[in-house]
Length: 298
Image 1 (cartoon, rainbow, N blue to C red):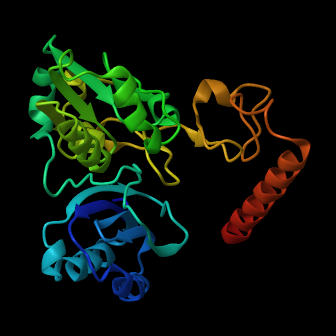
Image 2 (cartoon, rainbow, N blue to C red; image 1 turned 45 degrees about the vertical axis):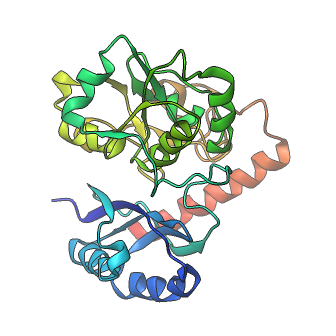
Image 3 (cartoon, rainbow, N blue to C red; image 1 turned 30 degrees about the vertical axis):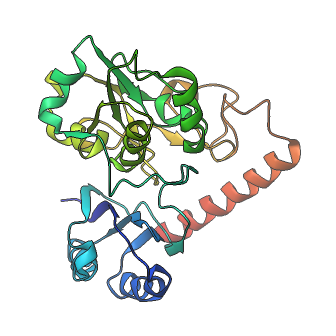
């Protein structure tokens, strides 16, 4: 059995005292032996944590004891090793940064579609299917026929909507993201702009990969995740990508064979962009990581 439980969680809810919540939550994470990162803002909570089954259950019970967080959205997976080394609870203006004032998923969002019904929806020729994630995420996997907004950050998504989408032309829009949280805001944005039929995948790609059999799946490739696993595939099995710490892009097996790939330093995506000073710094960081691993194994 896998030793660590990984829980991705979020909830859009008014938290006027979110600053006061920071230290108590951090203290409970430490007490229960959980690592990871949580974001707190006036609009809610978001993040991913990992720990033993008992530790994660204790943390979730603590959070849900606050009635405002009693309906946390939680998606779980597992791993043999913890994907996190640190425990952080950070205060933010938004729990997922879009940068548009007045977008409130608590008041207006798209229609949720369960994973079992998603294939039927996106097979409708009248549906415009949009991947709301960033370019480095889309690069390693997406749904068949999905539009890639080619954004480097979620802040650029509103501009994509203004430039490429029209409520008179795109009458049915379906959107998806990793765990569902970005779609809460992206669908709220489209509703604000006059789009009437707006749908999003409940639980995101992760829930789809967990519940929909691979032989019925319309997903191609792997799904990027924001921890040391780098990517997961069907049944949430850990993928074979490595993270390039030079540029932050996932590196597939074919790219790992390239002469320009140096683990922890550079990959084919950034080898010609990084400076010699950066290359030396990244190499030293990787040396320290390797040394620490060797000492733990000794």
